[in-house]
Length: 178
Image (cartoon, rainbow, N blue to C red; front, side, top):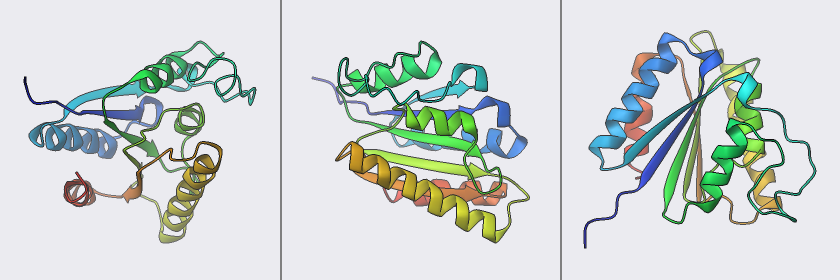
């Protein structure tokens, strides 16, 4: 029997793409591949990521399946039915200390991992206050999700990058967790 390969889903906001986020995505893919992960990159845009309707049908009537039929709904359903362990890395521009609406919608609608989830914000002009706000809000968002979905994340990490050197440091930090 062959060795089992773990998938790493790298989900990025294509509307917020920049040279910094492109470098991050490339470095993450190379780093994860070198670690033995099968890397799948998924670029989402605003038109593919409608907000959660709050109907809770994905939890009650048909677990894992969102009533909104778009790219996020299809990805969330796929991740819900994924039987093998996988990790999920979300790359989002930081906008006034927040995730982009595309990535917030994706996370609200079930794009996550029960094993390792990392959200990486990017922006060359993000100041320390915005960074603190971003890290706090993302961590609290995941904490609230764990209340609704106990055990949602085994481990959750939040990072922010302002430079290509930060991208290298994020890969190094992730290396200690994988």
